[in-house]
Image (spheres, rainbow, N blue to C red):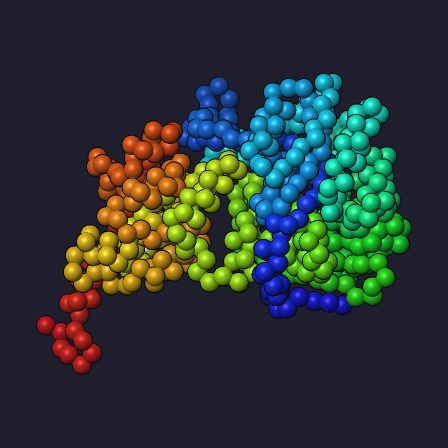
Length: 499
């Protein structure tokens, strides 16, 4: 039995991440439009005992098989996406989102008799209040299924691997799955399947199947509540169905890989430090697996890479993807990797906005980090999806704070901030104000301390011009770097008497 090293930390050469951009993947399955309605709840309705959500903004993302594609695109790979839509407004929205990705080619089969699948989530902050699904999960007609198979067959000519992403919305029935697997194997293409059906025989011929614990329990007819039970269940299914391998995803217990013809199993422990939201985690797993396998990464290493990617994505709110830099950092290949220059920060902020994520920005000297800083940064991180922190350079801080400051050099201050869980990026700027940096990043929310109430906030006019806003953060009284430095200077040196 193969086992990952203690605490789940595995060693995968981080240069693999650079290779992922060479992947060319075909994704076939249920394409969803994920719509988020963001707002704030401050009262209960007088009409009924329900919260009143004050509308703030809305955003749309690729969901289902589309989210698998989005994860592959985030690694820099090329994707062909085949699926079903209706002849309606949401279908137009999906087309518009896809049109923003130059590495994505779509073959959407339109069926006027059914709606495009839309999941609408209403949130206050990141608390989900309600989800409304617009869908028709019924079986598609024979004519529509034929068009789907034809579109997928054409796309296989360019692909190196095929992903079948089944969300049980009617696109992938048994006959269609069989035809797609047969067509792929005839071309020598491996097929990776994310199943939603209890009969594993439907996926016969697939290279790899990635059920979760509940799905595997149904397929095998037995619980999977331990390493031994997980292996036994996988072997039972492999005996029944002509599959090459099964990767069982087990949540907090990690993953178990069982391959046909191999006596030992691989257990990879979960690398989860902070679980924020498990939405779309399975999409990230199968996308990372397929992308890695497409560029020749051995299966065991691809599983380890997917496990690491899953640990990154569950720490993010909502439907999200993993960026190459984040994967490198999670693999331990980069130290202080969250400290970037302004150009890199602007590029990553632009990508986040394309994904519908809210980018926040705050700045300061952060000379001697104290509890007040941590409180404000925590409040900022809760109010946006990605927080960028601007840090005054040594020269800038000296002009602002006077002689003797900063106490710590800019590299140390930035590294300490990057080690916190709140920011995604830390950027050092040398100007007296962060105006230039703000213009490069274009944050959706500009954060300043509540002591700025009534004062002019640098960058506020620019952010407001494109629809952003300024939010004042609550301060924790009694904490001040200037006060701390003064007390340090008044304190006697070792061996001296206090004055």
